[in-house]
Length: 453
Image 1: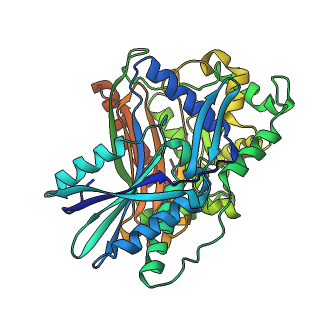
Image 2: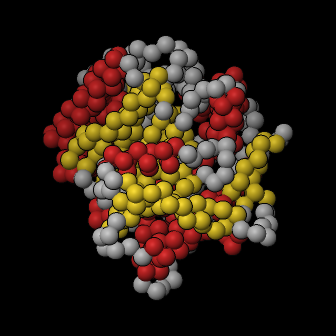
């Protein structure tokens, strides 16, 4: 993070008098997340992390309008007003009525240098606690001629695609209030309603349900519920290391256009081509001829949930051959077939499948037993407000204190394709992560240039 100096303000969420709390329902993701946080704290394990977003507002800032915009934002999304309680039967939540939430201004003083701003924001961002309300903090670094808006969330109330939603909501609400207008944003759904519907659909799911057949076949081929990342990261089982977090660009915007054309020429889409390229790059670095990974997929859809804060992520298993000598078109055909197979049971919640099919691992107090092979890709150009991301210098910030695993995700913006990697701070982990990054970049550039691996 690099921001100009300024006065650091926070608008802290508080409960107003006369509160009534209607009962809500938590999602499977939230329930597991909360239990992991509880168990990690009891074991004195460090799983500290945050997800945050920042963007810029030009000109002298109307602080009254800004406070109104932030209040509008937290009142707009029910998940941000949820409080959680661990009960014998699982995790429950209450939802504060919009009118029972207020924001209390807090002055954090003046940050004199960019490094001072960074350090202050980092301390604030770290203050979000998965076991304490509220699970969001909001504020701004205010200057005479501009402001950096920021907010940070616990994962229980936001996923990566929620961050541009928050940027768009706050920015548009601010412009409206500063102009004396009422914000006019698209309809938003209820994450609590989504959670209830998810629970209802899967109330009778058990280990013999045929909807778990896809998972069972995947486990038979993998040997475990979680497919291991197949390259050597040089870490000891069960040991936590300082986490290294790096983001690098793999392709320029122009190169991404070339990749898009090549993918279309063989009847696929960009995310399919990226999945194929990752499988081939891992194999080139010593991985197997069959790429087996877990793939997060969004549950938002194109309706009201497209504008809703929350954790709308399911995860599905996928496997396809990437043996040496296959053409790009052949691997893409395997990817399409694997995706078609995956979609047949895409409504099965990952956490519920985990609990039923790998109960021992589910009960462990870490998220993953080892480095898991993931494929994750997001196109931020398709998110609400994307047309203003460059002008607003919108940024997402992900931080993790410790790690014993390696994971990476790909994302596309107007300026190209990027790779964010988090890995344990060992020399071997660094060498393996950088080698894979270089091989993946070469593989993608080859594809973008002439359609071959």
